[in-house]
Amino acid sequence: MENIILIIHIVIAILLIGSVLLQRSEGGALGIGAGNDSLMSSRSAGDFLTKFTSVMAIFFIITSISLTIIHKKEKPSGSIIDKIEQLEKKNSSPQIPTAK
Image (cartoon, rainbow, N blue to C red; front, side, top):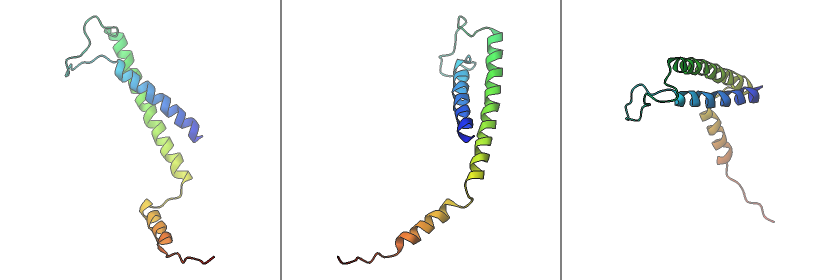
């Protein structure tokens, strides 16, 4: 189940990146904004991309939360610092060499 949601999450992330990059630049902060003759200059295309980006963002958040919940159920709780300290205690005991 986790793998299926992870694959969906990756596909949604790629679609979200693509939809953000396809949108027309409104600010022109870097001076590379789209001109009047651009491909996505019509208002309906802009509205579609805005709605599509919003829907993809909502799905991205839902899959992120669901992956977190699934992962939390599968793993035991505890601090990673506690685990590191336990490993250090196990490894800190001196090893006595054996004769052959």
